[in-house]
Length: 459
Ligand SMILES: NC(=O)c1ccc[n+]([C@@H]2O[C@H](COP(=O)([O-])OP(=O)(O)OC[C@H]3O[C@@H](n4cnc5c(N)ncnc54)[C@H](O)[C@@H]3O)[C@@H](O)[C@H]2O)c1
Ligand SMILES: O=P(O)(O)OC[C@H]1O[C@H](O[C@H]2[C@H](O)[C@@H](O)[C@@H](O)O[C@@H]2CO)[C@H](O)[C@@H](O)[C@@H]1O
Ligand SMILES: [Mn+2]
Image (cartoon, rainbow, N blue to C red; front, side, top):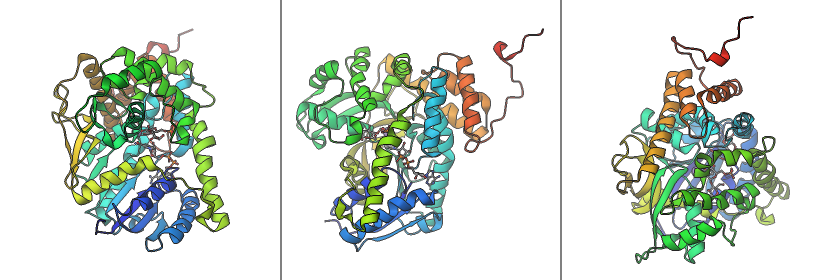
């Protein structure tokens, strides 16, 4: 049992993940003792439903933990050791548009990949910087464990705009896929020690060993070649959704492109964009699936607890896979030197790509943060893909900083998901119209040249 009692603020208190994470925190109090828990959100009404139910849970299960929820940044960020950040800038309303606008142009419509991810990035950068500034103003020693998306663009923005801030960017996707790998080979996820290189939602495993050093990659590869990452055992309900099943199955075709490395599932948006578009319903996307599924489940569970005035109705499920967030907090708090995949500045971790790219690699995490483990040189194919995607993300940050239309058009044009500069422009113009409330107003280049297709023919 660790001694120090911690105070945590969850930014994005009204998130569909908050209840599961709070339940997980309660379950892990022997590892990470809690004295105070706060929820912070900029949508008071959404947060209140989750918060009132959590208050009942805490009253019954851990009355000694002080609890409050607020929309006031000073209240939220004063006297906290950790901020767990999972905000969704623009909410599901904007996620739906991020997905549907590109699809209208026959381009991938996805939360974090392609034009949808770029649009979401343009909304998230300012909001995350604002959270960091609140944290530094009110609790300068606090660490932010950020898993708000699009994590890769957010991480690049933080690298450029807040290089010295105590923000750790992390994603649960490798954790989720490694859990599937462990099912395939009959081990537990904690038994695995992996090597991995790439960027967030964009990488490859090069080794999956047990602690004794036995290599399982060939065995997992044979399985993925036949089934993708679809496994028989389902531990989380959301991955029973048809779209997640399809994503896990499609890993088979990702592996075919390079059978020597195990792919991250989201590479499907870059390697098979035409297939993805063909198999998308432009009128019913993942945002709608989540609104009709996870969001409804979580909010009706909260309302049931509130109506019953007791948590005994047992409606909230522990988000057990999210315990990697506790692993990370413990690594910082107790210098555990846990090995975890983190999003960090490259600086030679991948030998043959630029040092100033935010990469996802295994790191040893202690009380000063993550220390990346070197992954050596990577093959031409992956190097090309990573360099291209990294420049897309740098162009997005450049567009946000300089309010530049041209940079953002270049970002969309360079994205492997977009077939031409002309399509990129059409998608961008629709995204600008939809994001007026959220994006900086983009200025046009003083030397702007118009596309031939934009010029009206003279009668
Ligand atoms: N990196 C990962 O591995 C991972 C995994 C799952 C979810 N996520 C991310 O977690 C986030 C939450 O996802 P969700 O589906 O629960 O979304 P959600 O919309 O249910 O929750 C997000 C909450 O953030 C709030 N919010 C938005 N902007 C804010 C701001 N500026 N300040 C404070 N609060 C703000 C919203 O009001 C909402 O209550 C998303 O960014 C999602 O992409 C990341
Ligand atoms: O479409 P959604 O909202 O269901 O999920 C989008 C998120 O997908 C990834 O997280 C998965 C993860 O891959 C899986 O293993 C499990 O842990 O559930 C997570 C949530 O679905 C991705 O990493 C996130 O960044 C996305 O937001
Ligand atoms: Mn992720």
